[in-house]
Image (cartoon, rainbow over the protein chains, first blue to last red):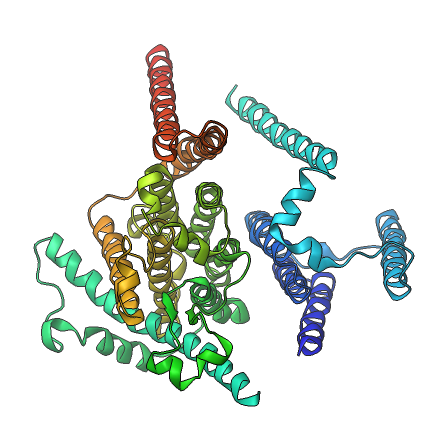
Length: 171
Length: 390
């Protein structure tokens, strides 16, 4: 049963990813991203990590991609011709980063298949909400605080940008 | 063994069927009630011709919707146009899965006997489709997915009015999600659990609304905004945007988007009843009631909040768009954030000093409300001074 669900949602995730990169219409790409993120959160549920799954949906599918959609709709990026990408430096960097990603994923899979290397940790222990909270405020307090400060800085930055922009228009 | 598995499966399927049957029964009644109550508030008669007191009007409307042509506007994004009403409806129905409808069905009741619940659920069959660890976060996640139906319905129809309606609706939904989340955080702080069952159990003695009237108020306001109901229904504001994001929908697709709106209302009413008004509990009386009586009690509470939704809609005028965003970001967000901090401080104080819970928590809320009033007075003064200067 679990295997069936895993294969189903895994296929959905891959399909969503293919839609993201393969579709010329940016709206469909954003929706493919939602499908991929939602399927990945379903995979977290199968692993017993309910909290991570919920956060995945709330933060990524519920908030970030909505903002993507906003931007795409308001800029009216429907012009499919303009989106035809040439082979540039950007795509070279993209390919390199993609290879790094594949390597990291491969290493993780290797670590799981050959236990004892110490990289793998059963997700179901991490997934319980209480344990996540406890870990965040004990072992991982410093990364947690650093993340908060980065987010705060981003927020302040946005406010500053808006203010300057508004002033420039008014004067 | 096999029999027990089948019994569990039947129980789960039965609960799912109940959920769908409840929503699909309540929605036509709600549509009828909305029209009748609005008529009553505005001193008109309302639909009263089809069936007794007009009760069959929704059925007649449905026949009309079904027999209309199901068209797609020219140059609309066909696939997304057809998908959007479903994207609105599905999250609304899914949220119902975490609501506990009554106390566990005891093994000695006829359903418990028939499913031989003694063998697999000696405590009684919980009347809740899934009792997940993250209960309220599940609601929150699905509520945040509800945006897609609205935003896509507005965009796919290829009409600037529907696009504006969809963007407005999703802007207000995204803005109010923060305050919604922070109101829920207060509930979690008070009850110490994410499971809705646990939250209902916490309210055995007294409902949460008596401890946290402020959180209850902010939660209700944000739920109204999430639902795009008046006074927050800028998405629809007929005078400016024809009919909002579902202007271009007709026939059965329009009926589906209406169904989604009212299903949201029904499920959110049930959720308000569970989180703040004791769910299926009634000050300890529920221990003496049979399970179906607690079910009726809970449905009664939910129906009251549905009436409340309608009542508010026909009492308050619509806000302007900037007023809605102002209320969301400059009033509700600081208030809910302040309430979360005040409640956390109050709870730690109670734990450290052994003071009684109620006065400390209430004092925290009084401080927050006083701060909000002070802040808004200063802001109004400043704005008036600026207006006078220029």
